[in-house]
Length: 158
Image (cartoon, rainbow, N blue to C red; front, side, top):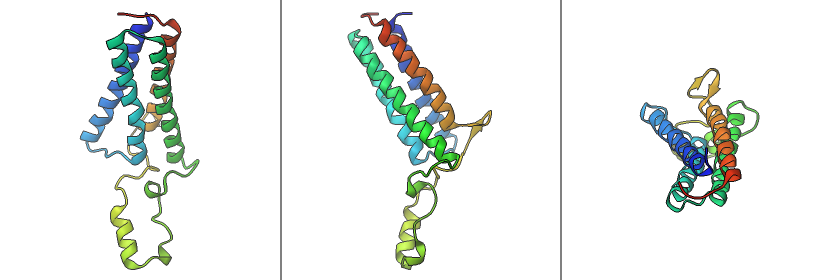
């Protein structure tokens, strides 16, 4: 397969992951802050694939696509670590509201009302024992490999 076609395939893969994420959201699985963060590199990868499609230039754009998919993978791995309690996630979506013993009642109420509904450190859905973030890490690694292959094959055109 040509580098051009691989780039389009990788961009389509990111688009499908975004559609799946939105589908889960529509089904009632509200995303946490880290879930949303993982989506942005996929948006970038779709845009890169669009540029490949428009310009026919593969090599440099495929490197950008690989970086985007790699970033999505990195964010997803971080999120899996937060879910597994290996490290702390962002304080405002991974647990406590702070040192509430020192807060006034109004400060505590404000913190509670602004706290996100979906926690980053809880798995809301899994398949085969792997969370959504875990699947995103696995699939993003595969997409990064496709982008890398596209960059190595290079080429122009359709």
